[in-house]
Length: 233
Image (cartoon, rainbow, N blue to C red; front, top):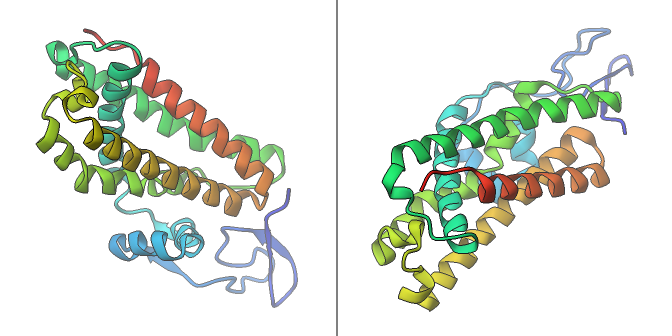
């Protein structure tokens, strides 16, 4: 794998994220001081490759913490739902604060670890990346999940109340059709996020096979965490 940018002035090769040529100092690309949140969200829909490149090239990865918190909240809720449906309907409400903290912590560690692992693996293939870029593209690739949290989750609670999360009784018993519709919509949001993550890996590595393998591992890791976070019930 190789992901270098050639300088138009001296033809020397530079790391993909570089702003100026290491040899002659010439400008290699446009400068992006900050990330514009709303235009980036729209561009992730319209032209994800351009959006991800801007995220990588931006000097200040603003809004990261805000987006990450929302993603962790939604994934923790999803974990409650999945474990209630596929494992057993545990009464997470009894220790809700503690369980919520456990879910957030487990997912937070995962999100901080993945960019570091990405950096080490790509380094072994002689591709230099920055941890902050890997973290930024990982977080911003989860924008579909954030949109689902903001737009769809309130509707789920309006229809099912607490039973959407705690499944006792199951939402598929309360309103079967609506439950399946919402579940399919959530699955599509996850798929969209995984596709964006795959595009980001392809841009960072310049390798489609590596992007496919990395995305597959990420999918397995995220759902394994969601299904097996050790909650109290």
